[in-house]
Length: 211
Image (cartoon, rainbow, N blue to C red; front, top):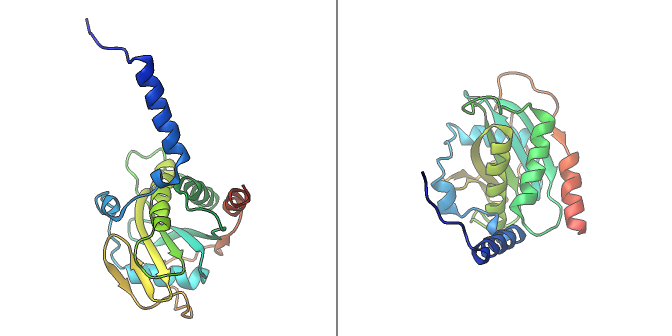
């Protein structure tokens, strides 16, 4: 026989109110740098090669997000880019946009017990490399999108006019940057389809901005 205590109606109402408030508050859907560093995000063996390859392939301008899937050997298997529409930073909206792009370019790995492939996110933006609340929302969105697509959550990288920075790791460089010309593509040993852009995720962001 087991004994327990049924929650009071007041406690249930309080919990419901707390959850509702959290879901309505975009600040609840972001990760601080310390949370990200403690999450066990796998380190890239050669981050500059990954950044250079994605920069060359997609040629991002500020407000462009690039989500890429790497195999265990860090070879690029799929990538997609889209433009972030003007709207408040919200991890839930970013999660939906990233998940829509992942679904377009690569099958999910939800049947695997342990994720094999890793998704990384490169975001080209204005400003310097210091963490912002917008970065925190992208981190939250990437982590959640990876969980829903059966992938490991990988690095979050910012690209600005000062260079690139892997947030939470302290690794970065001056080139490529938001203004530099593309360098030779080197993140994959096998040919890939042409990069994909726009699509459902852009429409999600467009609708969110219109609200």
